[in-house]
Structure formats: structure tokens, C-alpha cells
Length: 468
Image (cartoon, rainbow, N blue to C red; front, side, top):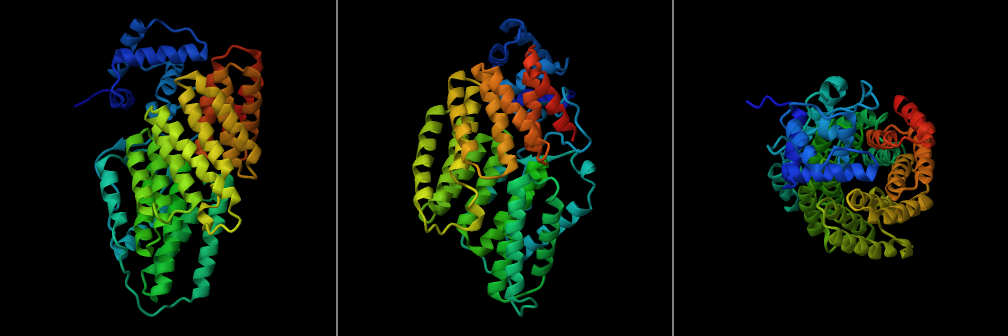
């Protein structure tokens, strides 16, 4: 039985997944230290330290955990299960463990999907969140990508009968979905996640009865959209296992409606989660499946979003040429978004505009810049464009500002990095998003390594934002 600490197994697994030797790992840690402007031992000494850490003989210090995070381009919490420089509150989450065994509720039959949604939401509403997140797992590999293939099959007919609700009630439910989605886009999922889950549970209750075919199909559409919102809010809160389950149920409810376009957006969300958990090959497979499903029917806005996720996967796979090629394609498609005055896009894709594409593009150039600083100026250009175009959405602005601060740091512009970081901290105090908090923690670690009085105020503001 493996007696090593879990974090030791994770860093070894992450290294082997990239096919790096321990010497490769040591070299990347050394490069990350040079970019951060801190002194570390030579590569040979670091290789021995890597061996000791992977064996669990010693736990890396704060500095080396930060350098690991930079070398892997992953949040520190994903690698080590905790954040040390800024203490975690009781509500902040440990990392999810990525497994390859199927753990998701793949049922596909409409009645079974309703039952699974009802059971998941009921347990989620009753469970103490702090207890729920102690042993999170998510599914990757064939346990995820193989079952999703059934999304491409012909839509299934749900049971129908006499309706006990009218069309007006369904319309009100559909309007509620728009309100919940607007909440999520504006502020993140922290405060409102339970409200969405409660509404999803209520829709599952309605679908336990039979209704006319038209009302049944629309209720399944409401269920699919609410499940996707619940998944995104859960992901944003760091509840990775719950997020994946809601996404899986969203794609199954969506199959009943036959709406391939919305189904593609669910697959894009599942892919984004895989990218966040450093499973880019799984993400690429999900996005290619989505593109296959809507290749002849996608609107420019949906297609640009899917291409941006595809480009993200290429960046995460270390394929910058493919990333640039697909990103350029996404921008060409996005030109049609601004010129199309009579767009028929549904409400759920309206968020994806040129500001969002610029933010996504800048974020991916930042990912590349962590390994090759030449990309940092591209990150600054695109993130600055995103900030100039955004009309609202505090969470997106906070993430943009944090990303801009990181890009300026890589560029060696400490003044600009501090200015962007201060704006990020000010916005971050009003956003309930674990993703924002994670990025703020990473920024805190990076500026803490800079022994310069310029960063003192920013360090204080970040601590205040994280304590709120």
C-alpha cells in the first residue's frame, strides 16, 4: 500500500502525465524561479529535492510550492491540497482528485434522468458543504469521454400525459433561468448556488408527473439549463465533483429536447472543467464532439466560443502554433458577431462577445507566457482589450485584472502589475468566486517573492479581499 502523502502522489502523477523526467521537473522549477527573480539551488540539487518530495520524505516550502504551481501552470491547491501563504477560511475548498473510474450518473432514460436530478439536488440541499468537500473526486479519461458520445444519438421521447401546469407557468420558469444565469455571470455562484439547486429540484418534482409533449420538452429544457448553471456555480465555488455531476445530468436532460446547440455549450463547460483540472486531452475530445454535433447549425457566436475552447486545449497541451491558428479562426468568426444586427442567438450564449473572446485569448497567452515570456506582451494586449470592451460582470473583470497583473509581472513592469492587482483586489472583495480567490492567492505568492516596497499595499489589499 502506498504510504506517501496524497500531495506527493499528485505531483509525481502530474509530472509523469507530461512525460517529464525528474531532471526535466527540476529544470522547470529552476526556470520558474528565474522568471520570478528568486534564487534556488542548481538543477542537480533540485532533482534530488524533487525525488525527496515525490517520495513524501519532505514537504516543499511555500516558495517551492509556488514554483511547482508555476512550472505545472496549475493552482497550488490542485497540487498540494492547501494554500499556505494566505490561510484558507473554513469555507474554502481542497482540491479535487481526478480519477479514471466512471463515477457519474449516466442514465440517459428520461425518467431515470429526472430521478437522478431529484436525488442529487435533494442531497445537495441537505448536505453540510464543509463535510461534503472532504473527499471530492471527478471522472476523467474514458469514464467521461465514452459515455458522453451518446449525446449524439437520436433524441428520446419522454413519457407524456395530461398536464397539471399550463404553458404560462413554464414561461415563468424559463424567465427564472435567465435571472439565475445573469446572477452567475455578474457575481459568481457563491451566494446563489443553493437557490438554483432548489429551483432545479422543483423542476424535477414537476417532471415526476406527466404533461403534454410540448410542456414536457420545455421542462426538460429548463432542467438542462438549470443543471448547467448549477454545474458552473459549483465549479466556480471549487465543488468539482458536484459540478461534473450537474453537467452530466444537463447533457442527458438536453438530449430529450434535441437542442444540439445548447448541448454543445454543456460539453464546452465540461471541457473547461477538464482544462482547469489539467486534463487538456479530455477537454479537446469533448470540444471536438461538440463541434461534430453542431458543425452545420452553429451560429457564429456559438462557433467562436467552441473554437476558443479548442484553442485553450491546444495551449494547455503545449501546442502554441495550433493555439494561434485556432484562435485566429475564432476571431475571424467573431467578426460576424458584431456585424450581425439580426442575430438569432439564444439567450444562453449572449454572454460570449468580443470582450469575452479577448479575455479568453489573453488568459491563454498568459498560460503560454509562464513558459515563454515572449507571449506576455500578447497577454497584456488582449486582456487590456477585454477590459475596455466589457460592459459588466465583476467576476470577469476581476479575473482579467488578476491576469493582467500576472502578465505585467512576467514582462518585468512592477508598477503596472501593482496597479492591476489593486483593481483586482478591489473588485474581488465584491465577488463570491473561488476561481477569483485562487488567482488572488497565486498573485499574493508571486508578489510576496518580490522584496520591493511597491508591493506592500497590494499585499495588504489582497489579504483583506481574501479575508472577506
